[in-house]
Image 1 (tube, rainbow, N blue to C red):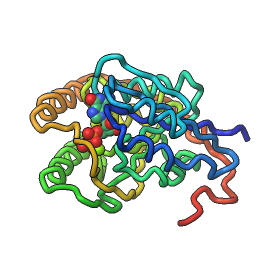
Image 2: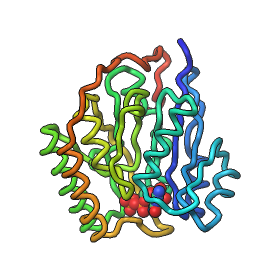
Image 3: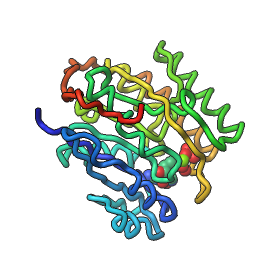
Length: 254
Ligand SMILES: Nc1nc2c(ncn2[C@@H]2O[C@H](COP(=O)(O)OP(=O)(O)O)[C@@H](O)[C@H]2O)c(=O)[nH]1
Ligand SMILES: [Mg+2]
């Protein structure tokens, strides 16, 4: 069986304090049939994000000269992953809030042929330090997606997600500010199989959240509306495209 090339990309804006730690935590050798490479999408950082990322072992760095937004960065991450020949693309926040070490668990449903799009769910797992208003915001936006998709979702705003090759190619992100909800609505409407796995989440101690309440509401709600109004075509999904021999087990600890 051909090796599966996994590109983990990190959208980053001024993350010099945390991006090095995240890169070092990404497991690279956990299965003989999986090769992991790391791509940083630097969104106009003005600090030492690039040099810290290089030093920590990032394989590729792509930079926007000017800050474009997280939606634009994730769109670029998926595009670059495809160009670099990824079989599977993973996005992971660069702020050290998400458990990079759970990468094998995130990939497992795709490598078993059970899903095409996997989200790490904080609400199925454990959460440390999330303030009440953020928690409520997450519930509301997750509930909205569940209603629109008529399918239960536990965490619609996760910063840790894996995309099969077909999902990577077909995912459309219709606004630059954010991607979290519109990409899920887009993929599920196209017939991609979504799965969530429980993850351990720890709110950042360094840096600042990018999310601002007013900007979020005025950008994200219209984008959700726009996405739902767009006609999309169902994709003929190759369900076993990434299946590898897992006799040895992909996830050692569980
Ligand atoms: N592309 C892009 N990414 C950003 C920007 N601001 C933050 N990020 C990245 O987006 C990810 C999530 O941002 P964060 O502020 O932690 O959002 P939160 O976790 O929802 O509070 C992190 O990897 C940040 O580096 C931005 O202006 N553009
Ligand atoms: Mg964050």
